[in-house]
Length: 253
Image (cartoon, rainbow, N blue to C red):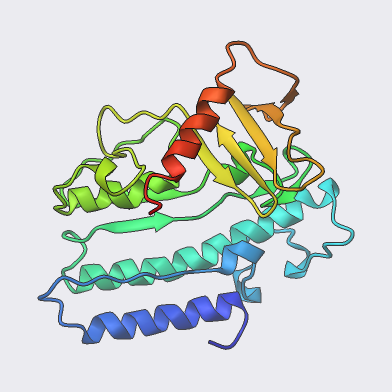
């Protein structure tokens, strides 16, 4: 699909609206829509509501904390632009009488940092700004509630298919916990970037490098503040590592 991300998002929304209009909605349907404008803070000029935004341009070679307001406004403008596209899709579902009986999911794969800890963008740290991803689920007949616990993205799809009728226990086909259970709990979750991996607990974040010269240099951070610490009390790192290794090989034949 030609164009920059916001143009692709607009065209994808147009195609989705045409698709749902022609679809036989008497049968179950599934759609996946990937909107990309916020990832690089892309949006048309007329969507530049939040100012100053630097004209929607950023020089990655010179940007610094002094540009935080501009960068954050660009991010908000891109999100607002896509929010309008999502609104059109939701309106179409309501128009066709599909909204109330639909499972609707808004999900992102990562967050975004704007120099809260001296970094910009994503994929360069495991602080909460970068690892706290969006997950909003609208379930038919469910009252709104918020899960205020440490969660992992691997929990969502298995938890959803259970709600859609799968009878098997989650442990038979995944390492997930039931996100919709009132007893949901995780001691830790795992997270990865291009060059590093992390085990994240509510209290501490353990970062492991994939680079040969740093592979044995585990770094520890306080999860709430991402402040570097030398050690922590009651360290359960060895147990976490063993548990991760055992879980990762469960489905390897």
